[in-house]
Amino acid sequence: MRESKLKVILHPVRMKIIQSFVNKKELTVQQLAERMTDVPAPSLYRHMNTLLDAGFIEVVQENPIRGTVEKVYALKKQSPDDILNLSKEEHLELFTAFSVQLIGMFDQYLSGNHVDLQKDGVSYRMAELHVSDEEFKELSLKMSALIMEAARNEPSPERKIKQLATIIIPEGAKS
Image (cartoon, rainbow, N blue to C red; front, side, top):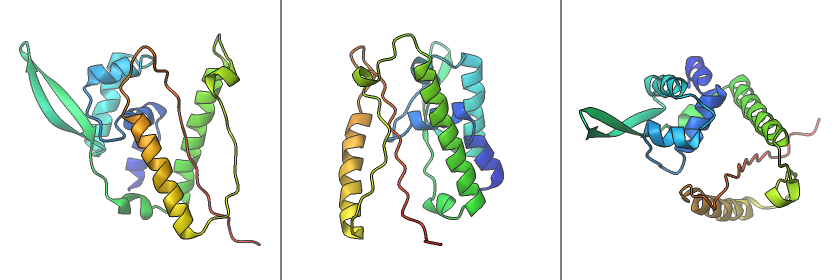
């Protein structure tokens, strides 16, 4: 992943757009706009074009509608090497952007009118796990399956958005 591609995804709106496509979702700009009501339509189109030009999303279908064409987008398959080959500095830059986005989301939540951490299920915690590589793999697969199942849910009036972020950091080398 070149530096220019990193800069493309480090924008908070573009990170949110990419997250909307996770789980192989295919969406139109209109469907994205319904999910991202805080982003004005012209801005959303501009960010979508930036992601399209950078190769993060692609048009997977075109539907003719009343003399115009509605495009359906999806995440473009990325090579695992794109992430694996990042430098230490690039990983730190991505992690920092991720952390800043989390802080911004939490600040936005806390600034709301009806903050009820317990009722809303807000939590943040760290847990030290003593697991073998095999146990960790099994745990990761189970968590992934549960998260993917919930992520497939379509928006509805009774469903509220819950942001779930995971960070897994092995213990570093002792100095």
